[in-house]
Length: 110
Length: 111
Image (tube, rainbow over all chains, first blue to last red; front, side, top):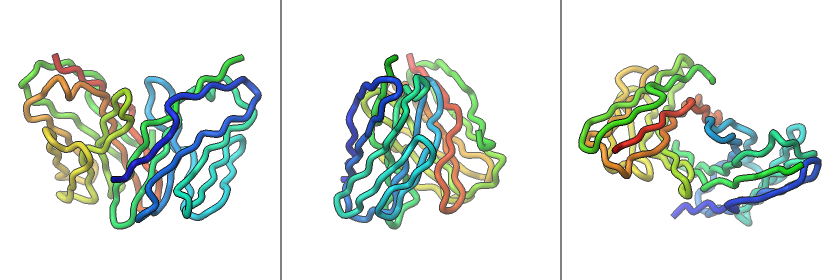
């Protein structure tokens, strides 16, 4: 199968740093995406990794290790508005499909 | 919302009735997708399209059909709705080598 695994829930404190992990089946890997989804809203695109390493975008960074089938999303200087679900999605070679993990619900507390 | 509109936004229907959800885009993107989102399952791909009249099945296609007769419209049909199809349905579009952009979703309740 194409199992994509992420923790179900995480909590953190405002101003802190949180790391959300995602693991996936490595066979046929062709890119990994992170999306943010606030309750009752549509997912919005955060980042894309296809090569190993770190991609930084302001307070958010995403890391990829293709050999380990592992990615993480790092959120720095957490704000209350970062309370949302974070979705990891993987594209596999030879397909136009994007397969999503079940998402990680992050709650940020004051 | 990247020029993507879903209709209706909310619908309540009875078991056994046919239902069609519409996704309309103004971006002229080649790829269009239908996902459903349920607690504990995340987003699951139902069907997708890679061009006019070109569609393929996703992970959970049973009970659903799609049609794409024009670039801008992708229709999802539940031939005979069941309670297990109560869900939030998201349409998404993308250009070549670009990320998905999602519509605002359709909340469907089958009673």
